[in-house]
Image (cartoon, rainbow, N blue to C red; front, top):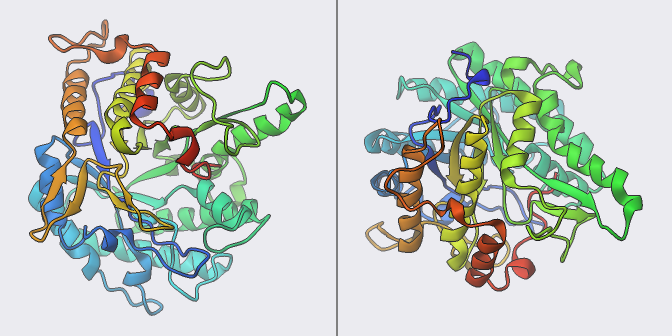
Length: 425
């Protein structure tokens, strides 16, 4: 069956429809400090208990990451010991990992704009496939480069991430696409069954009603969300080597600030009460209409007490998309474990699991766990015929305004403190 043309809402490519993702950023900050969130959260040390805890919650598909800078400390020499325990733990827990190969960071001394960067990334990707094939016969799922669009903006346009360039966003995006294509070619040469996910922000951008002259720039900004996907599929810049089957599965990242009035910044978020707001289900339909690919929500989440209602809100929109025939294959809460803030090391309460105790056990945020259980029942009983969920109180009856009032009550500072920089294309 060609999944690109499938409209069966109960099909999923993954082991579980509801997923979780461990934050695995490894980029350098302007201070020069390199992040290693997997280490900071203790996830590598406690991978077995982490995966087992999620499996008990019915979460059997996990986004996780490799740390290239630890694996290749010398050119062409690979030490996968930091991955081995995680791979073994995933098998023991019966969970399906989706591995990010490059989550914002790369080895020191490597120029991201060089040909060497593309070549070394391709060799690294191939080496990982060889390593993984020694341990498992399960199909390997890989995100070659996480959030190409966002990294190109953050690192190439406004200089808040490595490589700290300004006005070079398009150049960096092209280079990251080249690296992704080279890596996919190398991986498929070793194992043709390797599956690829390409994740990027799903956004909506319009001109402010008082500045209609910004409409062309706002629309160009909105369309930029598709640039990396188009190049990977060979629709644009075919000289980069993109091809149709490389755009295998699309991962769409959506947070509360992913709709805004151009040019953005504090106070620019579009709320559902605005006539400019577009339901998430419609945004999903737009992406599917453009690419006709299987897709899923690869990242979504929020902090503090708003977590359960945000999951309810996004899940409702996913069900709306499914009922309209859009093949959404999953919903991933990201991050699934609380972590230190990138810039200030504050305790970010945005996950289902908290920091580990001395025995590696993590407290569970019970309100979010209860919402996961409710949503699991709703998705499991979703009917293609009428979308009814038998025997389960369906929260879909809440309208947008009611959801937003709940979200605001759970996070009063939500439109002030949540990072406006995230998920720009």
